[in-house]
Image (cartoon, rainbow, N blue to C red; front, side, top):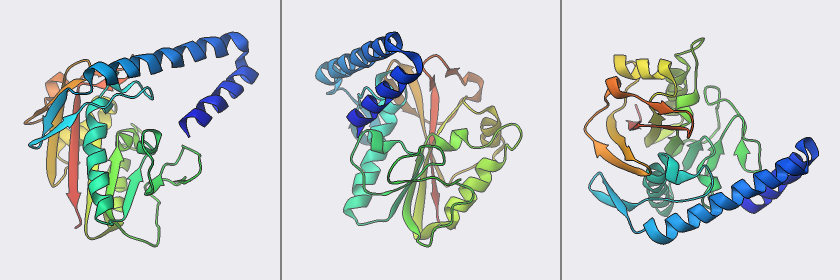
Length: 238
């Protein structure tokens, strides 16, 4: 799927912007793949601790994971998905992220990412007939809502809670600094979880688990883009 997507992008770019753009675009992709290979070859044995478990950093050319939090978040969440899948649990992913890295067979909800196997509906309005044992969302809730509707993220979580099975669980990854309105909801306690886990950037692709958020040190580097703090929140069915 990734190769087909790249070819499709190149063809569309050629039609819209010409040969020079395609050559430059192709060179960028080649560099990304070479860098990803180097990181995998020389750094993939390096690990980090989270909740008492050891994970290996995840390096991939898509969204250059070695430059942002995905190097750490992807292996954590993918481990949850694999274990849930082995237990035959019904899984919903809100925001199409994992399918760009792995072969997946769970339901995916993403309003804007139009491709086969993705449900294009708003998370606030999504109302399927089934209920889910595990709902995961990577970074997507950080984009829900705005200054005009800052409480939309709360309605989104409320709706996802409604979609859980009797003993279901939501695992949500939120980036600090991307959405100031969401940050304020976290700070005030209006947006809260049953369990909270925190990660803070050390440098490059290296992150570490910490005891809490530091709202006085929230930084979001738009040039990458990447935050310096991430929260993994867990909500149990209520």
